[in-house]
Length: 262
Image (cartoon, rainbow, N blue to C red):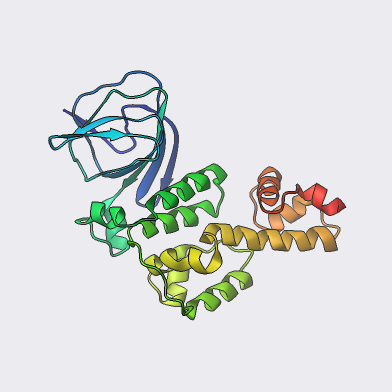
């Protein structure tokens, strides 16, 4: 049997992202790999983006197709056969410390996710954030990951008071990067609660909302100042002008220089 260490997979890892207490890898399969029984060192969650295979575990076979969500307990033994080529998975490996710090139980790792009807949507949001990959992506990915463990519970129709507080806080500190943990401490609300309901009241993830505020400020600078695009880029907290232009177009449909000419 093969025992795979963290960030080690049978396929080829094409991209790898490390966060606090979890790692995310994009893994592709273009040729046959070992079909031996194997296990992973940590709790392991996969979203099949392309291809698939026939997975065996605990005396049963499961046909894995694009869109399938696969969960493995730490060191759970399984094997994969008849892999379709090409195949691609988004793999999330989670440390025990992640559960401890967020007051989550490792004992219901599978059930807490499987009962969440929004799990595929949250994983796709994580995939999207990895494509953006900026300073706000980490908070969005973390928020989505916590939401996976929250189960599915609709928020009440009565808007909680923290919604307006968080909106005011984010607007006042628009040029800062604020983590989910900071918000949790400031509001005295568990990060899982913020993650679970943020999208309902803001119609986007926390990272997306922070980007929107920065774009709103950038629009003011473009229309009502003579500041260069480079100056606006850094004033609004973007890492470089290319990234600023990309995010600006995603939100407005225009590149910054095009918008300035309107």
